[in-house]
Image (cartoon, rainbow, N blue to C red; front, side, top):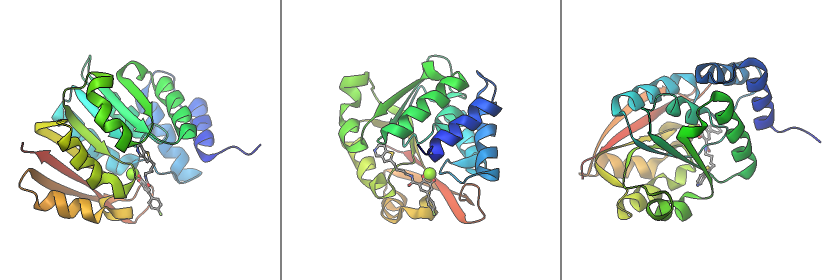
Length: 214
Ligand SMILES: O=C(NCCCCc1cc2cnccc2s1)c1cc(-c2ccc(F)cc2)cc(O)c1O
Ligand SMILES: [Mg+2]
């Protein structure tokens, strides 16, 4: 049977990356996507912006919406302080299966909780199921037409506190216009746009960083 692109990406990680070395896993995926097949990982250019936001936030509790193959999961987890936890949601079980193996190969599995399911179902369960109080950082990289809905859902569920940081991928391409409109005009957020490019291409894209003011 034909392999899928995530399976071919995983094979490249096993072949090229050193087990237990997150940076080598990130490098192997970027090489695969630059030389073999495009894939919707955040990529290295936007990934460096992600790294800087994670480092400056120094989060104890992180939520990632949209795991895909675990590329940004590994980037984030490799920068977390000891005992910090990252919960990542993926709705596609085949992608989740690949991501689990990428995360394990990188040696960051004990910092990561991968949950298979949809954001609308799981965000309301975060406190009761995982003992989450609030998230210090949320990386939005799932369905672009759910960024706004899920941000409002997180507010309603009391999952954001003063200083919580939202970082949204793809706010230019594919775009999340309703999210940008809301977050840039809301008095409850201070937003900043980081201009960049769509992963592995010259197309315009960028990340929107928004701090919840409470
Ligand atoms: O769709 C994108 N990412 C979302 C996949 C949604 C799956 C999930 C839904 C869901 C719901 N609940 C919980 C977890 C999850 S995971 C995406 C697409 C492009 C792109 C594609 C073609 C193109 F020409 C130009 C850009 C680039 C990107 O960086 C992306 O992130
Ligand atoms: Mg993305």
